[in-house]
Image (cartoon, rainbow, N blue to C red; front, side, top):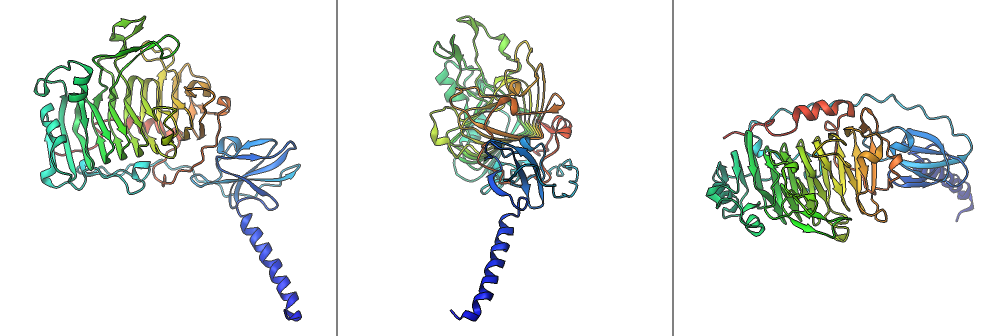
Length: 484
């Protein structure tokens, strides 16, 4: 090397090192070192140190020691909503003066898009998992010959079974009973109910109701190992199993178990369930006979999602008067579900539901802007818990509203319904419980969810203060236009 170049090269090296250090420190104060991504855990040590949470020029700094969850709840605020934040640890002692951050604008209340002239050709919005990885269009591209209008059980079954793989739209007019005379009459056994009551929707299908009174009775809508399905604007009466089974090994004193859900999403991809109502009414559980000292439970789930299903959104639905509502992941032993079960629940109204709204294993589940109403003293459907954080669950919760009479803390609405030795993880931002901020601290659950929301929530996510009015004003059937 030419010795005359050495001083210049040394200066350049110092400049590069300083520039690189500034770039690496862009998301935390000068002199801090990154210790975790949002959702992880920052290992601080026994001595109290300053810890920052945020992004470039927008961070919160507080004093902590030991293990610190890197999340909004821990730092008491979100300096950069919708962006992935980082934690960094600083020196021992007092925290540095915070860098002034711009005053955040109030979270805007989303304005709903103008309604479609015919919602039967709508596609899933981008603000949920069903709009991700290619999106969900159902039968939006159906030719006129593949649009079926049905008002009887036999016509509905024929439309579902119609030959061909082309996209199809099935418009339901009125309420259709799968146990009606034109489809063979009342079910005679569980196997008969499975044969005649299951509607096995094919890929590239939209099943949609016309008007506010369209619906299905005695039907299990089965979306199994297919791709690209939409179910909208229907009242689905949760089916009642004609032959419930007693299992003495289920729980400490045995339980009755049933087979059929309102909708089953089994190993399917790209599913949008929107503006529907799921209910046990008029056949509520208190009308069941007793056996083995318990009411015979003939209902199973409202919507169950299992077997590595992916890219599913449930939006603007009403769920009411039901016990075991929504299952995401059917067993702790189904380890193949890990990395799958990507499901969004947004703007749903869970009213008078006992449990599972939802109950999650393994899934990367996002809950936002949902409304929960009920009472722990309800005579038929007393609320036990709302969000079930089961084995390897990975839940992100935002701006949900819990109005549960008799609930006072996290334990009343968020629970691990399985073994304590098989925990999951959950983080929350902005949710409320009976008008107060919901704190997950009392539940002592991991915040290490390991993923961030990959889709854009701008124009979709509302503050908790606006959720009740939005959901009660827009959820359920009859809110969208479907032409004949």
